[in-house]
Image (cartoon, rainbow over all chains, first blue to last red; front, side, top):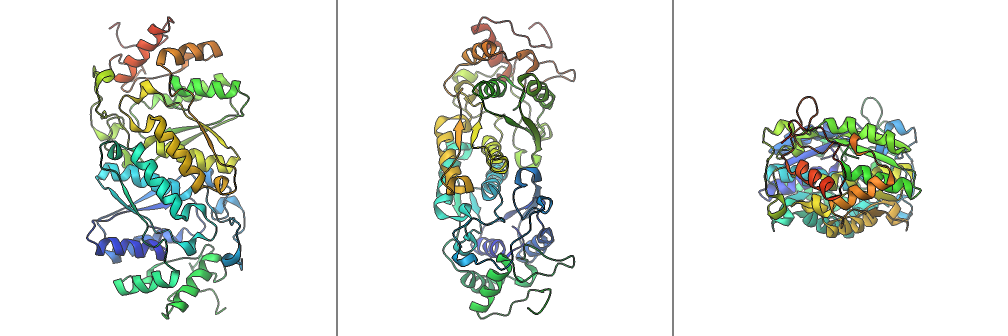
Length: 223
Length: 223
């Protein structure tokens, strides 16, 4: 649960499907540390069973512009929709680590269903958001865990994988997600206001616009 | 690099093959925290390029008897060689997390070869030590990382996977590993002396005996 649109929507979908949801938020030195506060508020609004925050070692991610101590600037105004490149905001093996922790925690709390909010728009060049990656992870998980060896493996749910951002927002809005609690910007200012120009802000703005819903985000300027 | 026999041997094999080795040691609240000191001494003896220690969140492993705060006793005198059960010393998704961190760190430092010391004897019921798990992990890694997406993926080396403990010890001894620096016991006393009766001690003792080499381990008694 990152505090963004996708994980909030997925958590609400799981709750509405009757799952008792134990959320994990990861802290890895990201510039947008404000998202951890957002994740707590989103978790409270959705009404989940448990929520833990796991600190990851920052050093292993030092090549990503999303990690503040990298000193690498976040790109603004990039043509994310038409670029085949993997952006500098790529965090090495991030979803692999997130899902691996979910497996460990799942085995500890007795959960067999893992929900992750990857989707095609958020892909934007991130290899670890592709359906074929999720499928390969699930197969690996069944071979490498007690649950898998004992015949009851894991189901990795990625219900947003084929949805556009507008569809995600419309669906979550209908389910009752309060998106004013969520945060998307990669590069917020000290007051937590969004830049409006990084990939993540632009995808978010276009999503609300295309869903014909008001964008509740506080932007730095009226740009 | 755990501070045990297998990772010491694998690290030495990688060094002798000409790799510049960056080792990772994981701290996860294990009873045998002494192994982290051993890992530092082993790393120094072998002569590697870099060594980091990563703290994992202990809460996600709380169902394992290897984690001190679990309060679950480590089994002694278990018939490990003839048991099909996964022992209580199983740490949920441990090798999945270890390898996932290695992918992230590998992408950050520009490494494409990952060495892990899993083997058939150490398997002892651990699903994440099987060759088919390693193969599935490698496939997932190529789909979920920048290195894989850009056409140069990872090679996961598990050179001990089909070796007996005696073969591993004999091979490492010939390469110059100083096994007196290594530690295997799951349940050492405060002075760091080994119990001699947990699975790990018994596999180690049998390994030195079968390799016709003196076991340099300090045991609590002459049992």
